[in-house]
Each structure stands twice: as C-alpha cells, then as structure tokens.
Image (cartoon, rainbow, N blue to C red; front, side, top):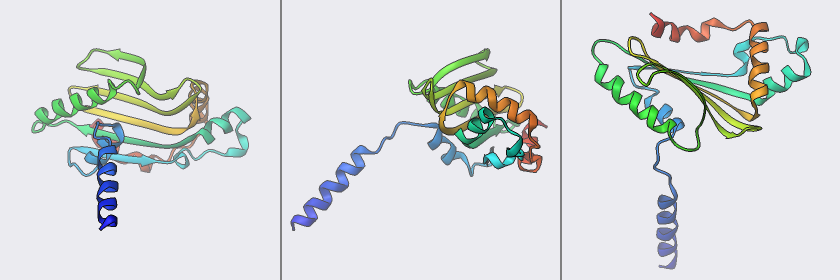
Length: 177
C-alpha cells in the first residue's frame, strides 16, 4: 500500500513540475504537422564547407553551431485569421524574459527581430523572426553551445565560403512564391 501512495506522490510531483508555459520549442513541435506550416531541421552539414580551409576562429564558430530549425507559415486567402492568431502566439512567446531582443526592424505588422537565449558569451539559441502580411512569417532557431556574437559574425564568413545544399531548402521556396 505504501508503494501505491509513494507512486501517486511521485506522479503528482512530476505533473506539477511540468512547465505549461509556451516556448518556441513547444510551438515548433505543435505545428510541424500543420498544413499551413513548412518545417525544416538543418545540421551544419548543409553548409558543405571544406573544414581544412577554415581559420581557427571559423572552425570554432562552426563547432559551436549544432542545428537550425525553421518553421514558416505560408499565408493564403483562406488562412488569414489563423495567420494573425499564430503570429500573435509567436510574439507572445518572444516577449518572455528569457528571449533577449538584439534588434528589431520594421513595424509590428511587418518586419523582423533577432533575439537570443543565454548570456552574452554563452548563447544557447539565436532566434530570427520575420513576418510579412502578404507572405506569412518564418521563425529560425539557431541552436548551439557557447555561441557568442563574434561566432555569429564569423559564421557569416563561413557561409560565404560554403556550398550550401539548396536541395534541403526547397520547401522554403514555396513560401517565397
């Protein structure tokens, strides 16, 4: 009988400790199969770079990058109301204090923002959120270990040297049409 009470107590503690607050990760998982969304997960292998030609800083920046998740909502004539609801959900998630905003462009209805999770020198996640009322919106999460702003700038130089596998990006072309 004691084990039943112990098990019930353990289960209730587990359920109470579950965080029900919305996060981008939960949002991605919930919408991956939604027909209005295009979801992509990309590893650093998409860059197709010759690692022997990278500088030490470029190599370190590439090592700090684990993966990139992209979730895009494609707006059409039938889903305008859902677009507004989903965009509001993302804006609400990004207002959480764990997402520190670096930059914002445009207005509330259209534009882009760049946020991060972590500290200045130990960034776990960069988040790019762009929306346009004619096309839809896209959220890009760049996940890594101990990334920092210098790594991101260095990654830009790695991107210039990369031979990106565009085949992996084909689903995003639907959004741009």
